[in-house]
Length: 471
Ligand code: NAD
Image 1 (cartoon, rainbow, N blue to C red):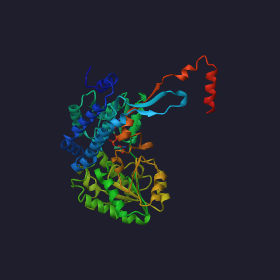
Image 2: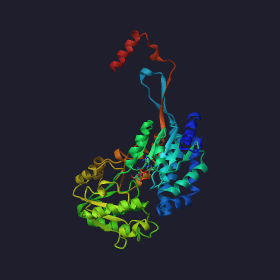
Image 3: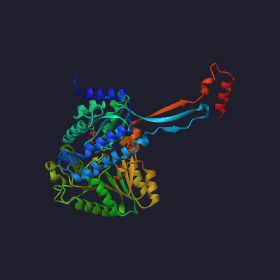
Image 4: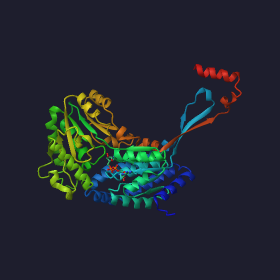
C-alpha cells in the first residue's frame, strides 16, 4: 500500500489512536512545546510565505494577528491542561448510594482540521493546540489558496511530529472533499457557510461530529451616546486589517442618522492615516486572488449603479484603477447600498464598508435581526442600558463592546458562531472540551442496593418504587 495516500495517513493515525493509551499531561505538554518550537523557529519563513501567497501582507500584521495569538493559545493550554484533565466528581442520587460518580475527559481520537486562506497559520494551529491539549491526533488541511504557506506547514509539521500524531494534507478542492469524507472522530471546519454545508453533509455519512466556524455579515452598532471618532477608529482598525479579509471584521455599520457624515469623514481619515497609499503601502494587505478582486469590484459597481454613494480612500486610489496587477483594493465606504445588493446580502470579506443610518435603536436592531445571525457583533456605547438592549436584542456568535475583533483573542472565552455563522466553539478550556469525550463513570460502593431488590420483585422493591414515584 502506498504510505502516502490520504487514506493511509488517516489509517495510521486511527490505528495508533485505538491501540496506544491516552497521552498523560506531560506528553501533551511535550506536543504543545514542539508546536511552539515549530512556530518560533520559523516566524520569518511563515510570514514570508503568507505574504507571498497574498501578494503582500505585513510581517508585523502576521505576527500580531496570527503568530502571537497562536503562541498565547499554546501557552494557555500548556499551563492549564493538567487542571482541565482532572476527573470531575459528580453527585449521586440517594437510591444509588453508596457509590461514586465522575466524568473523565478523554481524547476523541483523530481530529480533522480544515482551514481557510485568510489567517492560514492561526486557523490551522490554534485548533491543533486545543486538539493536542485534549490528547488527540490530527490531520490538517490548509487552503489551496495559500500554496506556499501550506507546503511550508507540511514540511515543518513533518519535521516536528511523527506522522501518526500530526500530519498536513495539501491539495485543492477534490482533496478537500476527500478529506471531509474521512471517518474522523471530530471534524473542525473553518470557512464559508456554503462549503460548511457540504462538509457537514460529508461528515454525516460517517456520523462524524463537526464544529463549523463559518462567516456572515457582522454588524457594528454605534449608539447615539458614543463618540463617533472613537467608534470610527475601532471600526476602521477591525475593517481594514488584512484588507477586510477577516471573518469577524465589521461587515457593515449602523450609525445614528445625524452622525452619518461625521462617521464617514472620521473613518476615511483613519483609513488615510493608516494606509496613506493603499496601492504601495507595505502595511496594506493585497486581495488574495483575482477572483476575489473581481468579486469585490463587481459588488462595488453594482451598488454604485443602483444609486449608492461610494466614498473612496482618495481619487487617485480609485479601486478600479488599482487593478488586478497590484492585487490591492483601496478602502471604500458605501452609503445607500440597496438591501438586495450583493454588498448588503452577502458577507463582503474585503475592504468595502457599507454604512447604514438609523433613527432609533429599535430600527438598528430590526435591521440586524432581518439578516441571519452573525458571527460577531460590535456595540459602541457608554450607556449600560443601551448595551443590554443590544446584547439582548440581537444574537451573534460573539461580541466586543466598544472595540472590534478582540473577543477572539480572549483565551478564556469560547469562540464560535450561531446558526449560519457556525456551530460549536473552541479556544482554551472550551477547545479542550470540544475535542474531548466527557466519559461518565459510576462506581458501585460496598453494596449494590439496587441489584439486591430483585428480581423476583418483592415487597422491598415495591416499597422502593413507591418511594421513587412519590418523591
Ligand atoms: P472556503 O469555504 O472556500 O474554504 C475553506 C476550506 O474548505 C479550504 O481548505 C478548501 O480547500 C475547502 N473546500 C473548498 N471546497 C470544498 C468542498 N466542496 N468540500 C470540502 N472542502 C472544501 O472558505 P475560504 O474562502 O477559504 O474562507 C473564507 C470564509 O471563511 C469566509 O466566509 C469567512 O467568514 C470564513 N472564516 C471563518 C472563520 C471563523 O473562525 N469562523 C475564520 C476565517 C474565515
